[in-house]
Length: 154
Image (cartoon, rainbow, N blue to C red; front, side):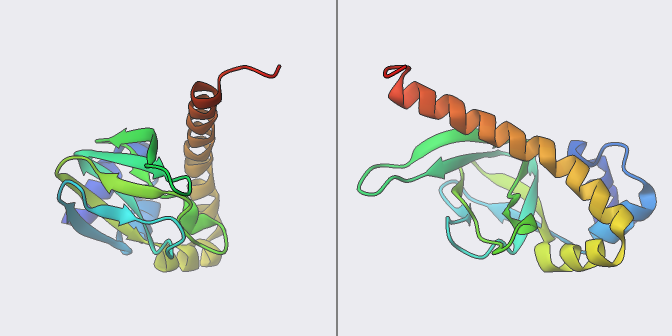
């Protein structure tokens, strides 16, 4: 097994993934390094990659007009960042900023979408892994909204 394939299959997000599917995914992978303060993605920009966090910490932020950014979640080693690659128009829906030195594996979105389209078994495996992440982010955002606005008005 080659380096990136081994790293992809060892990442907790892909725990238990069939080796053949790991090979397909790792064919779309490359290493990244983000210094503190650098962005993995900006809201509205094309979602060309998603990231497997190997080391470091990434803040997920939304920025209301005229206000400072609000961190609604923080992702660490073993987490993933960037599910927007799955849904057209394939644009980041939030900012993702490295809080500390972060090493990640980037998965090329178009490469993986094309492979998922050609191999529906791979596509289904990806959806089963990403839906819980999306639901967790919705829950985290909901809790942040409750924290900001409280429960007044009920």
